[in-house]
Length: 423
Ligand code: SF4
Image (cartoon, rainbow, N blue to C red; front, top):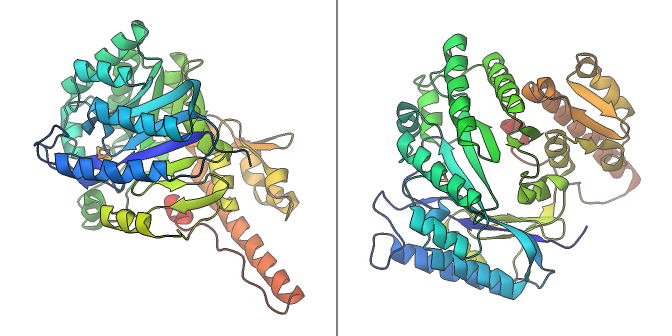
């Protein structure tokens, strides 16, 4: 594995928790701000002290080529606080010239002056959490901003890019919304949303499917029969519509949820999907600097206690099943013979034959990939079959290991939550 050249910093604070969100976040209330004396300011300052301490105590490594400040709502931080985090990274690792430094911003949590100050501090790429242009949809998602806030924020980002102060920016939208279960209406409404997004000309778009995560408001409503989501067929139609509209507008589909104009694919995200290592800092953040994955506690108290441990335990190699699923979701697919050298791919080819024949899966030399858009849109069936196959291989390996050795540790179980993620 190459030395890590990327770092993720988790900023967990939000004004409120959106109804679909299960991220490690700390809601501070709608009036919260990092300005001294404001509600939430002391919590933010105390957390940053921990975060800066974790960065300073990290093992040395080569200069970073990508940094991503995500959350949470990182735009709750003052520009000086963002600058201090970047200075800490610079001091610990260094930053290569032209490093991609991304900051997540939420509409209605910053203004044009603050944006300029973030860019002055070294940020050169912004990810804008828009989610929808529709006020009713935004309220239904539990978001704090409205459509006008999103349009205004996007305008500031576009202007900054035109002026050369911002290298690139991305807009997040959610497709497959609650209640949008009538195909004609759902497709018409989503086409209109895509049109609004394209009109803003963001160089990058992240389009996420709404998924029900345990413990969220939406999961509870769904459990009570009060929330309906589009079915799989409509979900696939929405994804195909996204692909068609964005392709026609010049966007390349470089990962299942991500589209970019030429030269604007997110370099940081590609690190995760490539299998290279990365640093992670902060509550709930996962790091894998040398191939060993280490997840931090998802609460502030747990994170503080974890930082205080003299030797931090944990970490496990990125599981093969996770690398399979992540790899297949990328446009370039995955080098399967290399990844599965231990068990071979002959039987897998037979098992996935129906998807190969249906044109959803393609084998190009050593690389296996889902076709775009049909394979990516209907990926769950292929991925579920792949996961079942890999679990059977694991059981076979365990059996062989038990036969050949009088005593040995069982191989690690497949990564938790992957099957659930496909449901
Ligand atoms: S703003 Fe983002 S991170 Fe915060 S609660 Fe909403 S979805 Fe989650």
